[in-house]
Length: 71
Image (tube, rainbow, N blue to C red; front, side):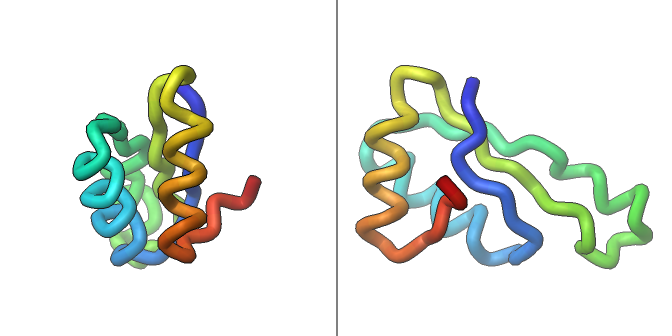
């Protein structure tokens, strides 16, 4: 798996997930429960991962929808 996106914005991960699922790419979210460690303040970023083979297409999908991937 490769990291596609890392963010602290709680709206970006669900939006990106919906876009990817609509294109047949199954993303996996890491660090979902890390908010327990920061007191649910949302300061620790969550990551969206995809399979290695889907990374190029997933980045293109997010770029087309103005979601920065940091890559």
